[in-house]
Length: 307
Image 1 (tube, rainbow, N blue to C red):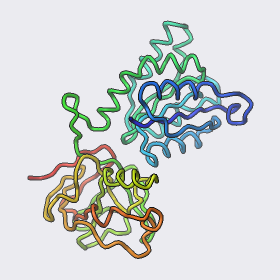
Image 2 (cartoon, rainbow, N blue to C red; image 1 turned 180 degrees about the vertical axis):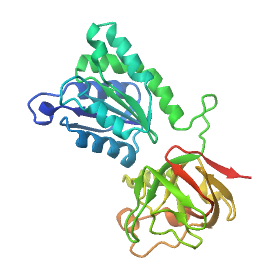
Image 3 (cartoon, helix red, strand yellow; image 1 turned 45 degrees about the vertical axis):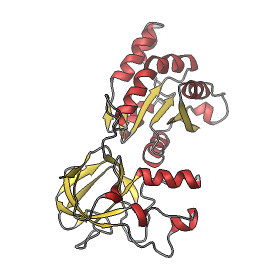
Image 4 (spheres, helix red, strand yellow; image 1 turned 180 degrees about the horizontal axis):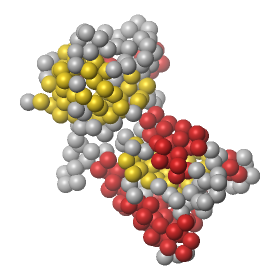
């Protein structure tokens, strides 16, 4: 099951002055359509709060589908589309166009919806109206396409379901000893590493990589969730068994060329992950590389093994 989140945006709802029916209705539709709803909340019509929740669900929790309901009209407090546009990296205009077309079959006021939709990393974010009826109608109009689109977003081939190796997240820490955190993009500099990362320098471990599959196995055992950067990885990948790559392998990470220099490492005695979870995958399945050619990388970029 793919994971989804539902965020209700309503001043009155967040204060308990109005019962939220749109959020529960969307959760019911999602669950009946084989989605696992792992997060839902109610927040006021506040630009910064909306943006923060969207970033938490996409960058932090790596949720595939994020639905918002409310705040898409003409009221001065309706800022959901603006907050969404501030977060997404690529718009998907066909989705709100299809929803408005469906709404126009029911009411001429359907054209007044300002809903937007778009992609951030591996997350698809869709704005829905605040009305329960309208939210159900709009999402039902696009839910089949959303399933297909999120499969494509996850790197599955349209024909055979093969996962294309790619970047899920890029992370840095400005100071040594601090946990790395996800950023929008990174610049890789030849014989140095990632610009702005505390572990860059003229040595063999300039860039660290870890596969999301390795993280997922530990999450399954412990029941814990680990956001990108938890294991001090600079690059979280999908669709590639990193620890099977021999030292010396050339890999194209975004537009940068790197060379594998080390598989795994010794775990620190004070490793926070090992203390909390009882295990740490980075020492066994993480890899390190040095940068051979300058380049840029960000979530969604493909990783290529150079043969």
